[in-house]
Image (cartoon, rainbow, N blue to C red; front, side):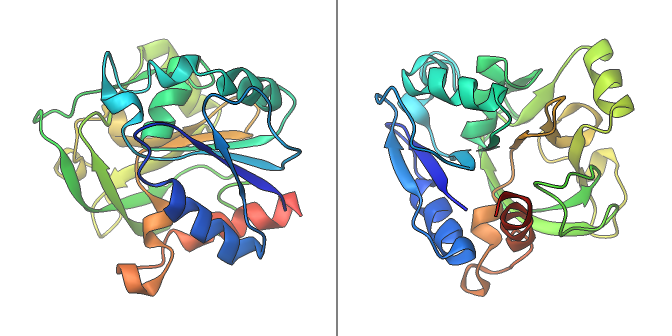
Length: 229
């Protein structure tokens, strides 16, 4: 499997993702600078977490207009898998590759801690190694992770099985108490209609190695290996 990680000024999780991808695939991903205009042949593109352009204007808004995003959108339209983590999720909504928006957290504060997620969506590319309904523990680190969309969009996401993860308690119960940022319907991640684009606020690359406190994110990278090899 060939992969590429897009690097923006302000990215701070690009190397973490690269380490996880190298460990999972045995191949070093291409690190593609945001000002580049073309991508190498690749099976997976990752938009990593961080604070692209210092989160000026609006999180992900400036990065969405980086030259490389034209190539990312073109590859996504052709069915190449695209994974956006945290700031990457924000960028995907700003480009229109995913619906909705990420608003400031309900408490207006930066949150950095482990959360529990319920695996909602079944997707051959991203969640094949998880069980539907499984509860996993993965870190979050964001100030603008409050997912919002209009009711028609939310109903479409629900009806089409495009909600990938929801915030939940350790027992798997989805409720307001388990919601760290105010996201509508406890949404933590969503797929596009085609199923080849996933955006999520939690950081699976930070839950890949036991040394970082957990391995519940490893299954996402293992899921990617299967269909893309």
